[in-house]
Image (tube, rainbow, N blue to C red; front, side, top):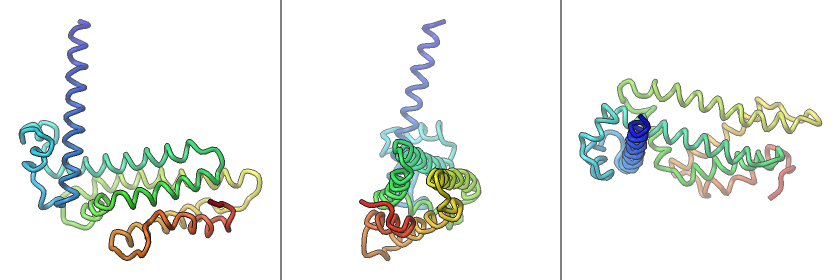
Length: 206
């Protein structure tokens, strides 16, 4: 009984590792070639598996692409949450929130392109599925930034938490889009201090 349980656990671990390897390889291929040009054969070769192995985990390229996007968004969300939660003061939390997002935009330009592709290209039944997940994560992100400003208002009312969250997310979104379209003269992370000065009136220093 125990031996059987151990064997099953080992199989589950092996399956999880294979799945992660496939997702990593798929992200690398999709980021270079895009959804339409990438093939399952390319992804299988990068992951060093047979094509049939891919289909054991993902029934189609469309499903695999969706999982790549979802995994990337979840990774971003968890990293942002961890970066903010490890800070004590609301000022440090706000700085961590802005810094993390701008650095992520800077370090993941090709993933940003995949987000565009999934929402603006005619990939059947894919955008609506991912959009619901994207919407939930966006809601969590808004809640995270609102909590920071609620914390800031603990002693004295100084911010409209909902308005401030919309302003910051709007600024970050525009910076991300402009970086993606090569319209910026500076890297996204260099805007961190300027954003903090504008939002807090200079209350947060370097």
